[in-house]
Length: 257
Image 1 (cartoon, helix red, strand yellow):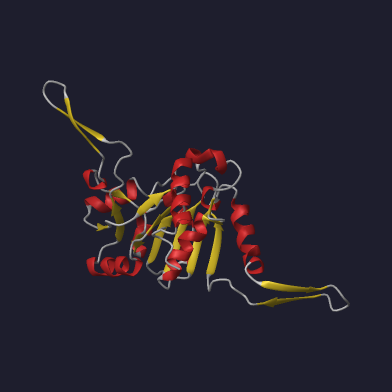
Image 2 (tube, rainbow, N blue to C red; image 1 turned 180 degrees about the horizontal axis):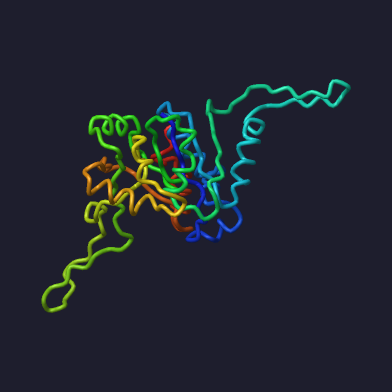
């Protein structure tokens, strides 16, 4: 099953770095978060990717154009033979299709633009700025069992703030750290779609998370795969620092390779 990764947005909430490169190319542990997401899918045997590019799309294309070279030992023979010999290739067995889906195209429009590369098959879709330890193959099995057009991974992100227990007298009786289970469920990405989703995508202005998913929900064609494990997006510099700290500690839940 092919995996679409949305990597075309501006990333304005982490503009400290995204003014130079697309947000999915911001590095964690020396490699782009996009690479981490792909490595995670690859660990479940999914190696066919379609990357929806937009903002500074050439940065993503140049990364993959040089990837084979950068992950191999190489001999350059500048004598009369003028040859390059690759030794010990360590690149992953990936097929990566990079598509310029437009600078200002919305999420649904980006998916519609890559329709021709899907060959009429079901596909996975996720965002280029979030990592998780969701079981990808269990997610696919769940989607197939539901026989609906769309499945999204539902997560409870919780809150960064603790809560106060206030009595009638305004006396604070307790301060509690916020548990993520206290919050509502939200779309965490890591979605699976049947080709029927294309009937709900009209043009570049289509926002997947608004019209299409709302319509599918009202029609009973959208189901949630609850995930109680790790999930973290990289919206801000604070988020990036958190993910970096997990990598440095050796306890990054998404790093299963």
